[in-house]
Amino acid sequence: MNRITLEPGKRGGRPCIRGLRITVYDVLSMLSSGMTQQEIQDDFPELTREDIQSVLAYAADREHQVYSLKAQ
Image (cartoon, rainbow, N blue to C red; front, top):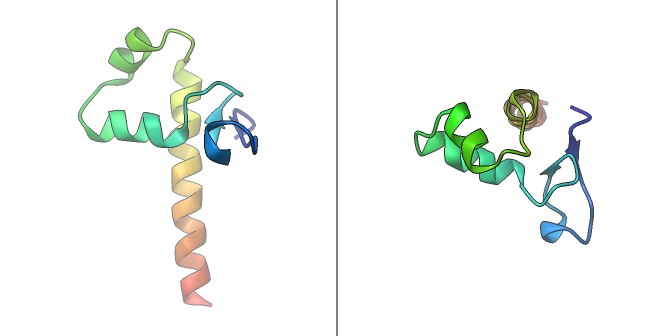
């Protein structure tokens, strides 16, 4: 999860990957549109397999937190 960074002045403060200008949302959007991890890496060679896995872990954790808050 240390691959996901938050910087107030970058991409509107949205969570990005390793300080790059590629957001968690960007990668999730590409995956949900049907792109494979390899296709994303072909388009963005600065991303690693671990970066994409970190995006998925970050999204899962955020989803878990939302449901945990509703249950309390």
